[in-house]
Image 1: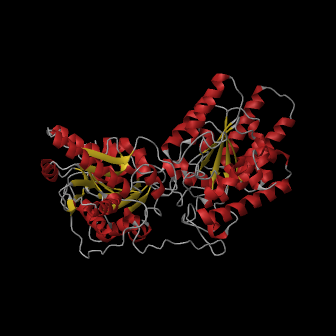
Image 2: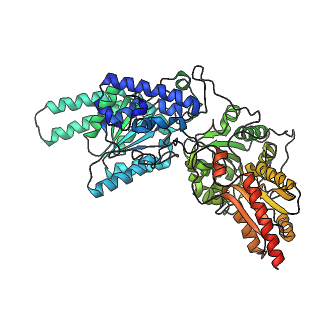
Image 3: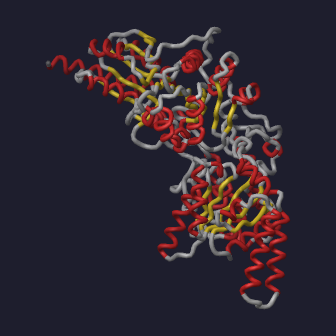
Length: 633
């Protein structure tokens, strides 16, 4: 059967071992070929080929609930559930999503793009099953990196305490995106080398079963012997202490080992944890040999060499620009430390870590801990730089509010991937951070128009010692502008007029500055001259400039690549209302009240009416409407 002919995973139950191995090889070949064109999460998916086939062989999806943590390793699952024919559209506009998607298939029972959610979701599904009196299996698949997330540990504690029937698959590849860190990772390391425990326990149980019934005392003694054996052979039996029956380590690329343990787990009552050892990137040497997470998620690449198809841009990446500017200043300022929640590669902090190993902290997938740790550092006179993606900053809302903003601590938060990110889609679009941060007292929020202004904003943030300060910056590369050699701070709350005009005003910042300038040029050819303002400080606003603009009576359009509800445009309207300047004509352009799907950013902006042409039409109609109203008065 061709992979594109698959409509249901039920066919796998009829395959023999040789056919399953052929299927695994075919799936790997398919993934390597398709992702070389579309890009995507190749490393995680190559590592779970046999595991995914085994799960669909021994469980009946979608009645049995297979729940993928993070979801970036669900490509094999998508192939086996009838979506191979759509892989040319993977992560493209209107195409196949790179994560589980409930509207795509009944087999996608849980949507996720953030880690550590699967166990809590599984507990909910298992509780619903038990209330309804059903008997289906619930099987969350979680990586060892995701176990560093506090939510996963909370769920493990609850599941073990409640003795809920559930089969947890711990997919242990010793990496999440970057190499895993932390004491829990060390526990797993010990368990990986404890193969003697499982075999010895099985042998002991076999011998005990051969003994005729000899009464409760001997049975109790036997349990104690097993327990002693457990402590003797495994240092730190973490999961069994939480109430799970632990099975493993299991070779995640050996169908016999997988099937034997899955069948064993299905017969047991209470929560079972299958500790499966896999190799990230299995079957493709460039991905398999990756030690730092480069092949976790990629753009297109050349299959023969593993070389990535590089962007034609010669401008620095935004992440690299910010990280390198912080590193440069850190050579003179020993207060500076850098913190990342498991994203040293994505946030381009490898060089900082190499140069200042004692001032760099990768805390694992633990955004809440990272944020409060930064607060703790700040109380002791340090200047922490917390590099965190916008989509992951959501997870640390309480820590930002309660621990950093409330205590007015000098933390520099670099919000990476701010704005639309494109292919990763709705779980990763960085469009909410302004709305959930802007209302926090003591906080400064800024975003540069280009990389030169960006490096000066880094200097601004590090020099700022009056509380927390946030710098937003987008995914991808800068504009290629000339860079100043000397850094200088930018006055807090100051805006910049990029183009003068008397017919209307565009207030915008960051990634939408080029769009605003292009729209202004088009309008000029139509006899309309508009002012373009780089509103680089979202909080505090430049109220002096706003008062001048309001007094002019010119129609104003605010533009932001962020949600309108609670965003920058809302801040402008709030200021007008609070200062009794309620007659000010203001329109807002931004992300509407909806989640934005995956696709090319330009396509997404076109769909929601956020292009220079839309801005031209909006400004033209607004100016005409204002002229009519003035005539009527």
